Image 1 (cartoon, one colour):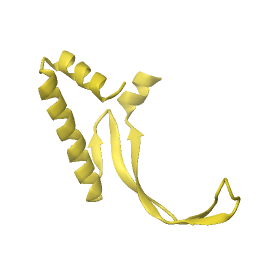
Image 2 (spheres, rainbow, N blue to C red):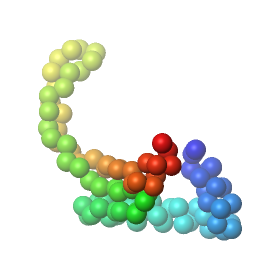
Image 3 (tube, rainbow, N blue to C red):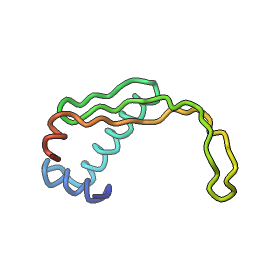
Image 4 (cartoon, helix red, strand yellow):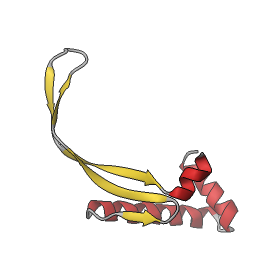
Amino acid sequence: MNKAELISAIAAASGLTKADSKRALDATVKSITAALKKGDKVSLVGFGTFSVAKRAARTGVNPSTKKAIKIPAKKVAKFKAGSDLAAAVK
């Protein structure tokens, strides 16, 4: 499912117009992104939790030259499915 299909599904399920559904989805994504930038967790009970994890610096291998390269430390977004979502997918 891509973003346009998700917007259509939200519109159909909620009775909102597609334009309103797009604004709602964009606002949700923007709010989650802002919270993660600040280092906060976003928990949606039953759905899951978005968080930020620190990935340590490490040594990797360039596949074309086979030389060792240093990969710097960085922060990555992480998602852990909640119990309701996990059960629905099962």
